[in-house]
Image (cartoon, rainbow, N blue to C red; front, side, top):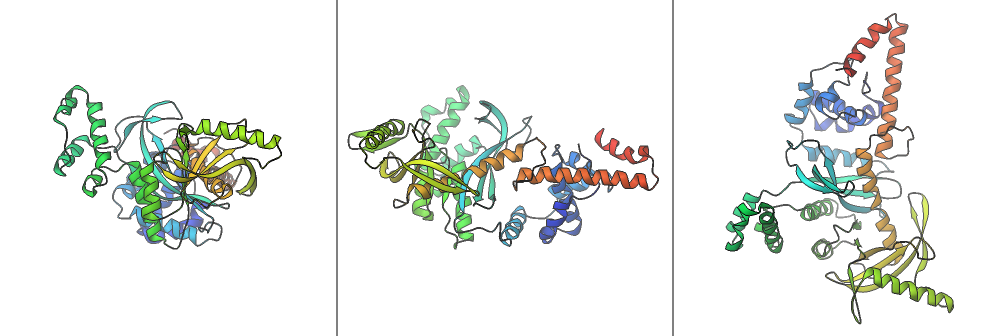
Length: 427
């Protein structure tokens, strides 16, 4: 643990933008809390409070900021977005991209509100975690989260009662599952909810991650109708109902991600995309031998100040369950020997260059999630949230060293100077 002898410079600089959200006392606690979130490895209220070894306060004061202070999270987030939009480097730009993604916030223990036992693909096992849905913005200069919402696990008893109240029939033969196999009962009710979620009363019974994503995007485009930004997402979010909502209801452009097992409809029937890609590769090699135009065209896109090269196939096709889509198949190697990636878009006139550039801007949300969970301490400042955190830790270390040196120069003994610091670390 790195003791703090002052509010870090980064926090002091930006804190005034958030002052109107809080009362004076809550604003002081807000600065302490944010400082602790940036610097401390221990993110608990008590752990953050113990960081401050000069202006010592009881942890209950910091706890009240989170439990009793009347500030609104929405107002705090809006202050952050207002700050970002006031700066040339971070304001949203015409070539910016929105991405939707969810991340697991793992906890050790089951006694947390809204926690669930969820599958973590990175660990290959189930973990107790919160699931946070993020709407993220990215362009070549910056990226940051815009809106966010915590997914809440369904309450099965409430869902059952709600389905009955809204007139959705529950088969009598399924009721024995409540006692015999609760997991199958849960899955049955969720499937029933999905089939009827087009009814507003049913939709309100449970907020899936797809519905949360729809709401976040609806809020964004309602608040900022002048911004016509495309939306991109991974394979999990590339589901027909979600894509139809973006296309028909919000009328925004999207770039989704397909798996190799998804089906493209061709004259002879349907074919999985991996097989379709192999056939296009064969046509590509034959075209090269005969001196014809290649099937996969070389293209270069700008990304975060660098240039990236792809070999792309781009045509309009009918995709099973999605209808007519602009399909892009990308390879990174000129010989097409690497694994392909498959993207679709509702903009049938778009070319591979634009679709690939937009989809590339989904990656920053992954980095944001990884950086937010990282424990490594480095000192390179590259502009990312993780780098700013590491820089602030280094700055706090410098402030601590200056504090010790100043105290020694004023005649205090090393034991006197270190006593509160050691007490904080060896709590």
